[in-house]
Length: 218
Image (cartoon, rainbow, N blue to C red):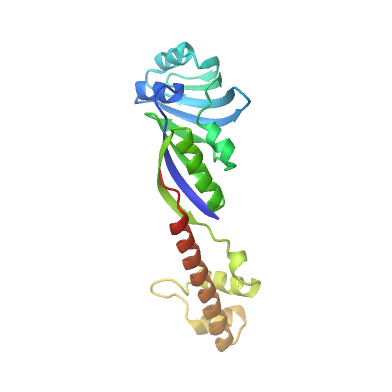
């Protein structure tokens, strides 16, 4: 399943973007958040050298209807908030992509890590564009579960080969040694490894080509 990293730029006029741009040394870490019909609530960790000034700016923002400081030190505060403008969460909700939390917002930008089917990631890109939120795709790669590619026997042998150092450079384990370790004839061990390597490489290239073709455009 594809795993993507996006950098999302929060538009001007949105409270969390405006506040973090006004305090460039601050970091707002979104720990949890959810949306309703016309509002959103969340729990954030704010770190800033001018913490009180940032909190004052949040309280004065018309989009923030409630702000409660739960814990606080000199430069860090744990804050629960409610807002009438949960813009970042709306395209995520509409696309059906689960957003990995926590994520951090600094200077009006958020870095998101997403794991979802390719069509849902593409749909998120469409939703972000419709909401006027610009973004860049920093990385997109395919996560391959070995159990989906290899048979149980192949997987056990490949794991043993890695553990014994067969794939190290230089090798710490010869094919003969590996065959003895796993209790297989050398010819059987060689053929099983070759078939496993073939399946992994073909699956990798298939998934790579699919990801490259279907990557969302900013």
